[in-house]
Image 1 (cartoon, rainbow, N blue to C red):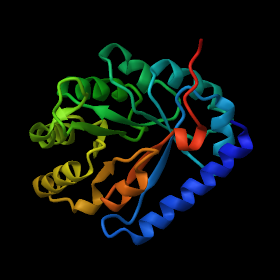
Image 2: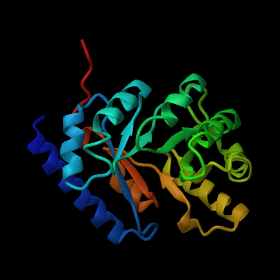
Image 3: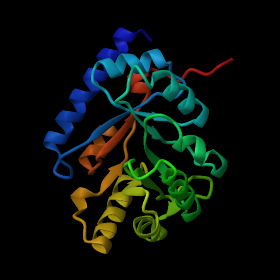
Length: 230
């Protein structure tokens, strides 16, 4: 896909997101995370030049390589790690230039490790934003914590992980995750509107915004189909 088409796609998606927020009764804000896995640094830089700042990567190696390649050209870029977290890769995630949010924390163990690694950045660094991944279907082959355990993990992060900033949860099941947000707001006293919900992808991000999403992850609709090395 040409850079011109990608830029046009970006503008169309941003306009669609803005329009959806305007008519939504469940949210008044929504961030676009451009999912750039398997895509070139050139494509990312092209979107950055159009004002896009948030990009999502599934694989640690890609995150490391792209964040290093774009660190000087795109200093304001904000990377989201959206893949499955592995304990032995947490240090690499935390040391990636421009890492802004980890969207797939699902255990106290991983929260502690992120907290420990991020503490090495010193007091001058802002807390690392993290989202609790919720397995709303509770299928064993899917990632994420059980619905009933999500508020407990969120509370653990809030109280025990001072180097992390817990935002809320991520999952494609809109109504169930919305319910988790309501429960979390009751526990903490935060307003539901201030708690972040990351849900919605290329095929359903407009529906997700209507259900209260504050962050949508769009990949193929922006960059085209994934490109895998042969």
